Length: 385
Image (tube, rainbow, N blue to C red; front, side):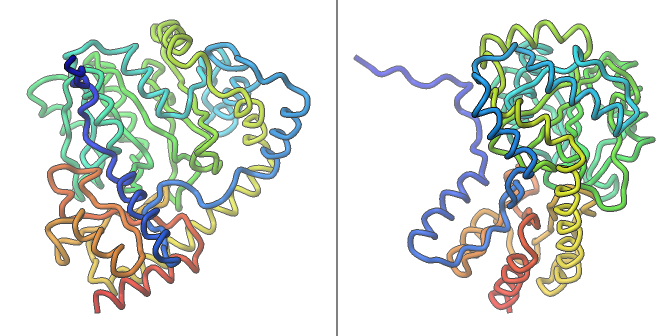
């Protein structure tokens, strides 16, 4: 009997940073010298208040299935966060809790678009969004965004499109560039989407990590957009897999039904503990992490010229530097593999985020300790010298 082959949906491109982590694991088996400048997650655990709340929940709660939309306690905490942080009035019923923002994005694609619909994303941009769009049968439109627009889309760019997309995905702060969309431009993009019947999907999962440039919520400018949120980045809770969606009314019930069938609910322990992530005690601890990211950012920007790197996206937020390494290679994947083999420093090749021009870019993460960053840069300087 001939074995059945995988579907076309399973033929998506790899998330190349995961391939880097495979090589890192092999390096660790043979050497004890790896410096991770490739990871997209904090190097710190969840806040102490979250860990205490998790311990309490483990001792006293059943931790069975929750409502598909999430617990009322967690949805209320999210809604209160938006009122306090953004002065946006959000009701708990407008929040759906998801298995990380990744689960929320997939639910949004399934609920909002049919196969063949055109969905636009920025290039460079987060590769899993590109791959999810393709896997769900939608058509992909990549908007080439460079330094002239600070690697973010503009209304002029959208007006020039030969075909109006059904959806537009933006991210601010963005992965891999770290750039933030100005409030005026976000307002203009939101208005353009509303006027043209385009669903705006705003990835705001890096909010809380910014360096002197304000972040704004898309719901300031209309509630027909989708906002993706998560405890992963600012709150140092990547593996807890809890995120949320702010949804326009027409999508809430479809997303609830899909969630109930695909995942039943987000992890109960993460929701129970995650309420504490919004409290003052947690914020004090987390803001200290952001101050460390800021110090690392300043260190990195001061030392990039030692690597001959003078062209990079302005890292307004998150913890990444998107660096042009065209003077070093025209094959970033091969170059990053060679650097890891020669130095033990792990970097992310740019092709993960930009299939067209990423061969001459890399993403460097500065979310670890200052000592790790210094050691990594020192090794790269010695290697290239």
